Image: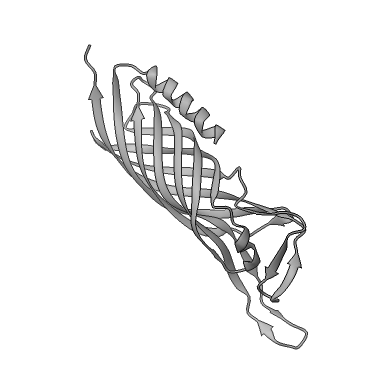
Length: 231
């Protein structure tokens, strides 16, 4: 939580330093991406995910414009597991397949973007702080861990992209985001007893911590409202 309060203070200070004109933007953003998970004892395979956000931003004046933004969205996090077909000791053949561990999260993000020019096409980069709440989860494997899901999580987002000015007050853009979690989506202390749903037996955990990393590919449309202050 300290990360969010620090971000808010920095953004408020920047906002107070802007000039006599600013633009307020309202955006709808959606896309897909790849979800990854880091476990204590290795990594999982990529998982196809999707996301969507509504965004409000405030852009300062000047040749190179900075922007602060806040977004509220719905994001799927998690990782996958790919099992190849195999034949067991009894001669039975299992086809295998792709399995997922999915977390359906409500996401609140606050951050800053910097546009590199003021032309009809404007590339930008930015960074934000995220807080997320897990609304539900779905496990295709290792169901025993579902009792150890942490509902509240937080992380950062590194973003880059560009937007085209279609009309004076309408822009269309694309964005790539790298969104690592700082907190643990799953945490199982060492020595914890849990039910193994596959064998229906009680097992003792060696300890596990699972963090999500998502790479997002988005498109968005942005509606602009220009505000001019007169002294």
